[in-house]
Image 1 (tube, rainbow, N blue to C red):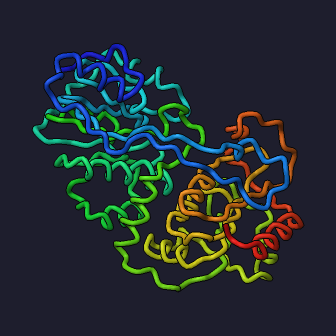
Image 2 (image 1 turned 135 degrees about the vertical axis):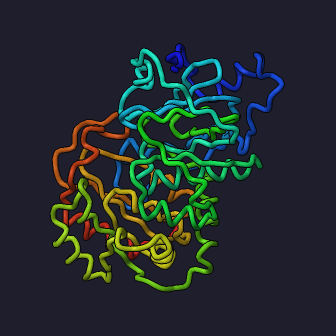
Length: 385
């Protein structure tokens, strides 16, 4: 037995909702809007001489509404490379929910199939919260856990949650437990999976709807929820840990600091302690960032822990010359952190996009020690606000 390959597509989940309201599902509850559109004002980075990099010149960012969609007998299919497809009841792909690694969703691998295996039907209500990069700490928090919050807020009873099956990480296991989601409710996707639950529940993924794969802003509702929900699970964060920390990427595969020994030597003179976040539990990371007052770090997922910093905490983010990702500037704006940035040594190519060259996103960073020294002195002497 087999099923027809999807034909046609909806550009977005909301487009499907709007179309279905007038069609055969008009008597069904199609969606629940959890948060309305929100515009967030942005403060410029501190301690940066003009001209400010184009990526940091925005004065505000608008986050679209967040909602939960209900697809009666919708389907979920997974390709051999684990790229999943959300298939509407009328056999069309919902493109913004069927993301791929750096490929247009319009050429999704599902279209290359002559047919699909028969879907496994179930009477359960199944929610899809997986995301292509959810083995990354930042994306796990912002694109998986935050969407679980939308599901909770909707009041819909969920029997199972589908997450990415590319190996469970410690932070995934720890944070799901912190939110009280039992392991038996977690379904990890795998190649060839094809499900057809009675109700397929899909929380919106608005941060990527308009500009796939470009820097975006974690919605303020999401950052507030994560800060409160995860901090509350570990109780009151006491004044423990280091006041000044340098977050090392020495064990990372990409975006290493090539002269880290000299960087650490310089920073130690100002009382900074080097930390390796991968050696810490989520609980320990939360406490570490909650107690820090000054943070220096190369761009990386560990800075998602800025969620737990106190207002006025100073943050210096280190970049390679030709790649910028402003997500942590946005996050700093959510909680009143003092954000600084510094580019590494090397030729900087002209950049009008504000994000540099995406092909350079894995480049290592050679820190200009003199510039770092000047920036740190400025951070430590300037007042907050």
